[in-house]
Amino acid sequence: MAARKAVEQELSKEKIMEAARELFVTHGYRHVSMRQIAKELGYSHGSIYYHFRNKADLFYSLVNQDFALLDQKLEEVLRQDLEPARKLEQVLLGYIQFGLDNQSHYEIMLVIKDEELASKLQEKPNQSYEKFAQAIYYLSGQKANAALIWSIFLSLHGFVAHYCRSGHSFADVETMARFHVQNLLKWLA
Amino acid sequence: MAARKAVEQELSKEKIMEAARELFVTHGYRHVSMRQIAKELGYSHGSIYYHFRNKADLFYSLVNQDFALLDQKLEEVLRQDLEPARKLEQVLLGYIQFGLDNQSHYEIMLVIKDEELASKLQEKPNQSYEKFAQAIYYLSGQKANAALIWSIFLSLHGFVAHYCRSGHSFADVETMARFHVQNLLKWLA
DNA sequence: ATGGTAATTGACCATTGTTCAATTAATGGA
DNA sequence: TCCATTAATTGAACAATGGTCAATTACCAT
Image 1 (tube, each protein chain N blue to C red):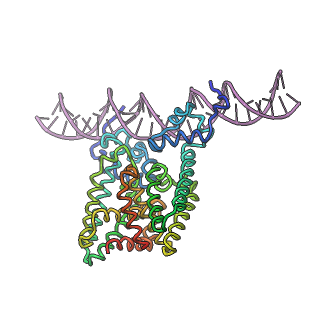
Image 2: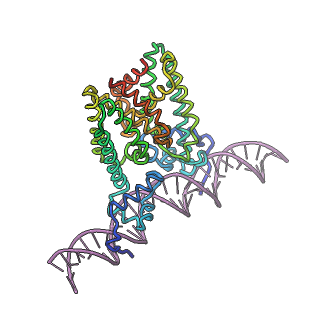
Image 3: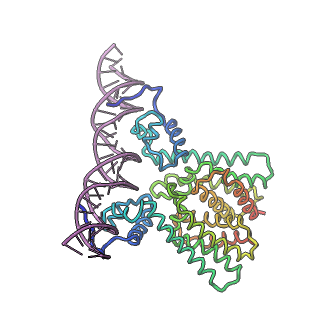
């Protein structure tokens, strides 16, 4: 009634995550079923549960990848050869772009309230924020205090959260994003 | 196999909404089923579909109520006898306080994402925002343009959304809220 | 009384996340 | 080489979900 497949065709966490990411990004977390993911891979839905405890676990694995991506993006900007003021601008704008380019993941990272599994990820967001805050601090010539940086972050988050909800792309709102960032930069002048 | 109940015990939109609100507030939208709501009321789940087209429809009726409450709060502040600058401050701070004093309402209004009918009920939020924007506009001596007011709103929203998620009360974060508002007011100076 | 309408029921449907016994491929030791 | 053990996969099965609808009953106007 059931069988194991040849070893070179075996499923892996990586393959599942790849297919799942594609589907989650396209249709959103709630509108993607484990059966759809399995079908995409040509496997039975049960097999996914051999590799991930449940759907949320699979999704959080993706979210972890995304936080790493966010960190990477930040460091990319910091490595660029720009004046501090320009870099600062790019860091803020980059945050918005990241959020809107990875909407379903951003929601899980920083929007959706889910007590049961929120604790699972608590380290990563704090860790990522710390890097963000450090960057702002140094790029501002060590003028910005912690509260001000937090204020800036919350304002960026508001932008991303709102446009995530309405499903706009970064391109849709880029002009407004740049304007928002310019306003935030005034606090650091 | 089925029966209609005595007229004084009849179900109504209001009764359903009351029970639904209670449950949504406690457990969140996704974790409340139509059967739970019906059980709470002592009715069959099918009866709710006589009064509301579907779960989302019921949900959005609650959202409308909450927006009316927000409008009321705004007008309360505007009626106060204060200098425009003080009033402006109170409008911004009042928005945050409303959000954190009515966290589950706020989530329903502006955080929770429900793709299916998101476009359907865009009137109320827009209407409420329009009042908010008008207030800011006049209190700023007609200096603020539309984009700047929108920027301010998004920044306020970020504050509320974040602390809603972590479940902090207004009292918990009042100092930070006042600081955030002071920053936002600089854009209008 | 009677007929029409309004409200309620619960069986029913398709779909979901999840579990698990059964099954088969791979592996390694004798 | 053979056999026991393990690893991976299957799909039937389960409970819960949102939603539909014919049947049923209370109400009301005439």
